[in-house]
Amino acid sequence: MKISAVIVSRNDNYGGHLNERATYCLNSAIETYDEVFYIDWNSSTHSLLYDVKDNLITKGNLKHIVITPEVAKTLTNNDPHAQICCEVLARNIGLRRAMGDWVVSTNIDIIAPKREELESTLNNLNKDTFYTISRRHTDWDQIKKFHGGEIKFNEWNSLRDYLIENSEERHFDEKTVSGDDYSVINCCGDFQIAPRYVWDEIRGMEEDLIYSLYADTNVQKKAVMHGFELKALYNPALFHIEHGKGGGGFLDGINKKTNDPHRAIVNQFKTYNSDTWGFNDIEIEYETI
Image (cartoon, rainbow, N blue to C red; front, top):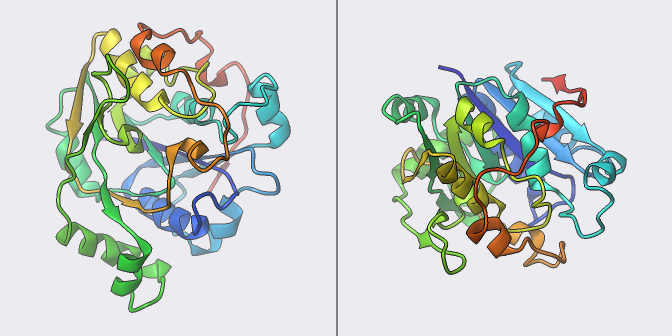
């Protein structure tokens, strides 16, 4: 079984302690998944990866793609209100190129589940289903307490073991608008996983939803509209590192416009994406680390 993951961010210290969150996230991802795509979208100076690279383990499975501000503007048709870190387009670049049997769309704030626990779960899942796994919570107070008042990147694995032993399942259901039966859980986009052919059938994230919010619920409705089941899971354990308001940058005032929830959820049927979703007609270079 081969598992791929797609992670998106930019070098803007969104939510604070971004370098630290990214280091825990990427180390756990490199250890858990066979293939990790990190797409750096619209960083004004340099990719976030270059700030954390020295603290990362290396297995030759991290694929690093940089979308510069100039290219980002072109890909969003120069829309001044496009999400500064345009998640749907960045994710689709990775989702389209991922070669795993199962493909995860996740975030830079997530400590990935242990490989053996994730693989054991996947072995018992229905392959005609789109899954979202509910995150658990951690914060810097808990992390520093475990590390004796410091942040020790080389002890991320033992930190994860500690968090697993001292956490509970997070059952937090959510509906975002009237008629929403598809969000299923709060923050459903933190860990969405499906077989690669499911992502291919629904053509990834909806590419006109270039603003903040609702795209994660949207992709889950798309899965249902294409005839797949939708289910929330509460194991294996994975952890979200607290970083403030969230909301795709809208609640912090970083992005000024949101997607229309009625377009994204109520009025979404099968995908409107073209056959070239993920910009598969454009050659995009990446480096492997």
